[in-house]
Image (cartoon, rainbow, N blue to C red; front, top):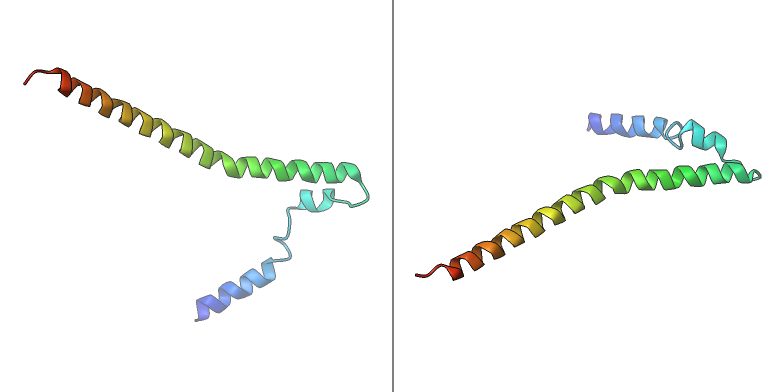
Length: 84
């Protein structure tokens, strides 16, 4: 129970510091359109960085699946062609 209380205390104290990175927090000024564009750029770059590992893993998985399917078809056609 004590480790759970310690974790909750650390999270509660650290929330103000973890609200945003300093660059994002300082660059967003609602009256400055350049600041909003900068924040929008940060947002889209973060989305890109989050999506890239899934895109790479999915692409590799699709490639492996297609190659295995191609090899299975080739082995099935080879067994059909050989006379018994």
